[in-house]
Length: 79
Image 1 (tube, one colour):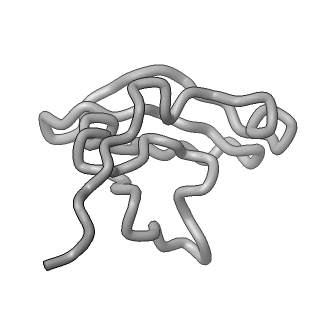
Image 2 (image 1 turned 180 degrees about the horizontal axis):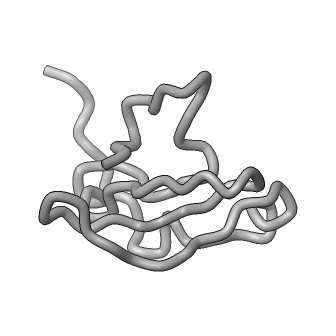
């Protein structure tokens, strides 16, 4: 059996000064196919809708580090 899942704090996924310096902005909340998400915009004006209701299962709602080479890592779900 794997390690227990650690819930993330409710503040996780909020816009930080470091993200602002790197050109990210949080546009607000939305929904995609009925699932709540946080809308993030990068320096190139691309927007991502990151699932924001998974913190209790350890899923991040942080958009700034969500994609690497166009693919999201296992701890974040892009809707």
